Amino acid sequence: MHNAIKKRAQAFREVFTNPVYLGVSLAGAILYYYLFRTVITASSHGIFLPATPAYLMYGISLTSALLLAVSMHAVFSAFRPRRAGASCGVLSVGSAFAGSIFSSCGCSAPILGTLLYGIGVNSFAAANLMIVIGDNSSSLLYIILLIDLALLYFYLGRQN
Image 1: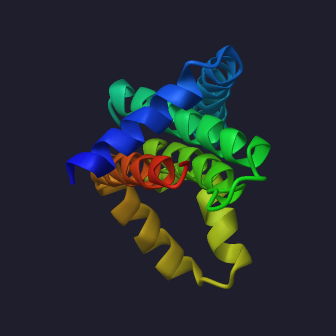
Image 2: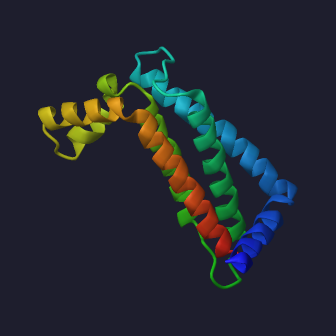
């Protein structure tokens, strides 16, 4: 157990002592925050009204940006075996997008409604799902944040 943590700490240091990956993380965090802001504003008819605490949005933006930097490191180091690859980058974008959907008001999220109708969910089921998401948005964001941290731990273990 101790060696696994040491290995991940070494991989974290390897990735984030490089100024390129630090820049990618910073740019990613800013872009993910603006993704949150854009989705919340679009779903609230032009008004930025997050239904969850701001620290959760910042936390998901930060962990998603760290995942993005780790995935870029893995892609650029792809000639070594056992790299995480681009799947980590896709997961970082997906978690930031899902978090922004959950942090907007679930009862008035036209983006979520459009997505649900597009996959064939009827209007009653879509309305019920949006109410459940609206009622449990903070819990869902905590879950996404924990998933991001677990993915970061997992992918850092695959770096060496």
